[in-house]
Amino acid sequence: MTAPIDLESPDIRALREKVALGCRILAKLELVDYLGHVSARVPGTDQVLIRARGAEQGNQLNMTYKHVSLVDIDAVKIGGEFTVPDETKLHTEIYRVRPDVQAVVHTHQPLATIFGDLERPILPMQGVMAQVVRQGAIPIYHSARKVTTSEQGAEVARILGDKAIVHLQNHGVTIAGTTVEEVVINAIWLEHQAKLTWWASMIGTPRGMSSEDLAMQASEGFGMEARWRYYASLLGE
Ligand SMILES: [Zn+2]
Image (cartoon, rainbow, N blue to C red; front, side):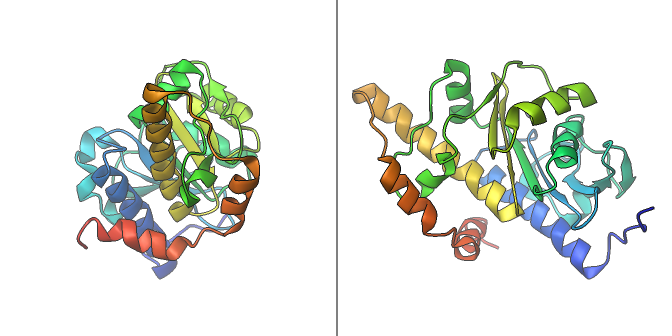
């Protein structure tokens, strides 16, 4: 049996604060509104910290660690003050089958969603940000419905497979990774590559960078901390 988790212990509080900061960054960049959520696995467990339900918390720019609750692997709330989102099983079913995944973000970001509808690739268009699409084709979950049941969540996780990003067609995207910083930054970068692919498509037929150049960009490492500080600085904090 897993020992109870103290949500106010320094490590857990720091992770809750990071989830909340991820929400604020995504809200600032208009990739989430009151919908969309960030979650993180409590290291070494099947328990997950997830930002509380948007309809009750309102503007994610105001999200604090107190708005990050704890659920078990069946998406049942076991800690925290506030109700969790009705799409929590979208997160927990990925954590259930992907022990490598430590963080998940789900957004309704518009440009990536357009490419999911069209079933057209988001190309590696520019710079280090292009590495977000190095997984190749983004698999598609062919339903616009909210993911609220275990069966739906498990199907999304199956379609995601061992990749990092899955389209939820006419709904949004879900991104899995090893840290909160990685999944939040990948959401930002995915939207940027989608924007450039879209703009280029209005002028001609975009090529996207070569696989060699993309591999080079990906091999440069993520440089996560500095980028995270940059995005956090946009909040003026
Ligand atoms: Zn959603």
